[in-house]
Image (cartoon, rainbow, N blue to C red; front, side):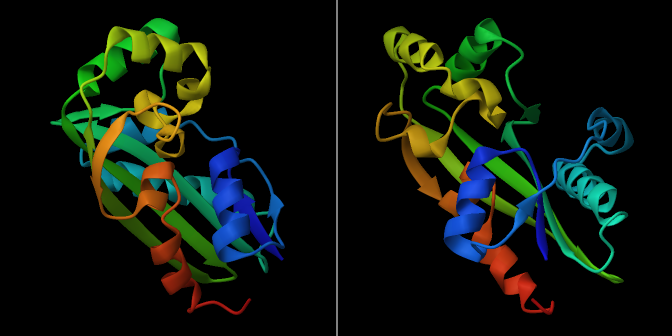
Length: 188
C-alpha cells in the first residue's frame, strides 16, 4: 500500500495524476516549529519536517510505502510559510510583488528499512500585483492554506506569476519528477 502523509489537496491531486491513483491519505500530526528551532538552513528545515511527517505515519505502517513532503517559500533570507490570517496574506503578497523568490520542498519516502530524502528548489518571479488583484485573490480564499500565500495553479485566474524556473509541481508543493526518480529504489 502507498500512503501519502499529507493533508494538502494539491499533493493529493498531483499524487493521483503523476505517481499513483491507488493510495491512502494519513495526515501526520507533528510540531513543525521544532525544525525551525533546530535548523537555520532552509533545506535542512524542509527535510526535517518531511522526515518527521513520514516517520510519524511509518511507525504504524512499516511495510507500506509512506511519502511525505513540506514546502516553504524563501524571499531573500526570510522563510515564508502559510499566512496566519487575511492581513498576513496581504502583507506576504505585497512583499512578493514584482520580486523573485525560491520555493523549496523537502520530501521523504520510507518503506521498511529503506529511506530516501530529497529537496527540490524552483524559482518564481511575481508580476507587479495591484491592491485590487491581491484583495480579490484573498477574497477567493485560495491563498490561506499555501506557503507564500499563493498557489501556482491559481495563475490562470489571478495573474500572479510572471516566470518560473524549475519544477512547477514543486512550486505547487510536490516535486513529482524527483519523487518518481527516487521511487525506482522501492518495490511498489
